[in-house]
View 1 (tube, rainbow, N blue to C red):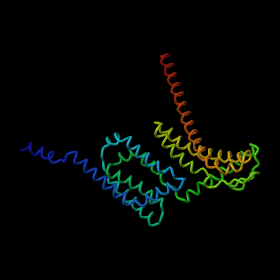
View 2: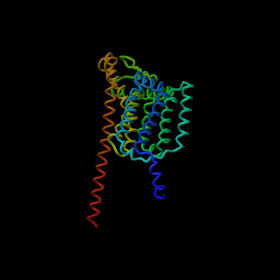
View 3: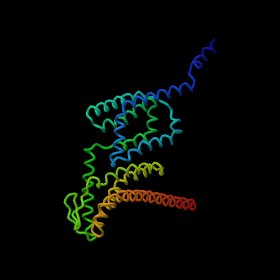
View 4: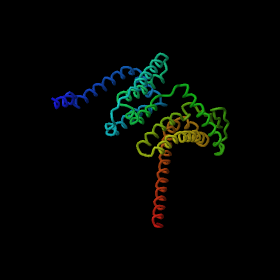
Amino acid sequence: MVYQAQTAPFAERPPDSALKRHSWWQAAFVVLLVGWLYSSILFHLAKQWFNDPNFSHGFFVPAFSLFVLWQDRARLAREPRKPSSWGLPVVAFALSVLVVGVLGAELFLSRISLLLLIAGLVIFFRGWNMFRAVLFPWAFLILMIPVPAIVFSQITLPLQMLASKVAAFLLPIAGVPVLREGNVIHLPAMTLEVAEACSGVRSLLSLATLAVIYGRAFETRVWVRVVLALASIPIAVAANCLRIIGTGLLVQYWDPRKAEGFFHSFSGWLVFVVSLAMLFLLHRILQVRRRQNGGRRQSMNMFLDEIQ
């Protein structure tokens, strides 16, 4: 009788296959519910990616996050499942942000609530350890959400003024007379206006996203990844300034009509390629310095061994 009493609880436990099927059905139900809540929001988000060139990089962000999750699937499967009730307040806060965003017609709030909801669900069903394990692909999703228009204008205007000032300072050194009025540069042959599209914010956002992807794919040191991501900002700004200067030189020494035609469209792609090359060069410099420092440490260790 004692033996039967001890084994009865083990016989009543459901098999692992049943637990897995239950987890899959649970996950499918949550995904469908979230999809129903955010279907309209996601549709308009994808529509903005397609129509607004400033945020066309948004298509690559969720794709890369899913790639990272797939790449780390073995490590994530080994994470212990420790559900936490602290996920419920996060879910409640995310839904509150969603309601405020929808009622106030604030797209940024309604979109950011999706990331908060994902975080809360992961914590509630799998625990804090799992959330820490997926922190990078989750945080990377922030780059897919366009910034509010008021913030976007606060970014573009200083970039326009900076590009105008740098061009007005360097063009006279190259022999081009310049008269600057705000973001308008008056040249002898024509007038150039550094408009919002020429502010460089488009290449800045795209380059920052690619810098994070590049660092995650080709670098293991966290501090180097951070350096590459931060360096993308001055690199994009400098490359855009070079674009404005190149346009001014083209107007002065070649043909003003060329500056308004093919070169104006092509220069944007050319500047972005140059920015990527500069980012790659910075990474190579950091790698070379790492090997040099490693060689010095090895030589010092050999020298100390010989002394001993």
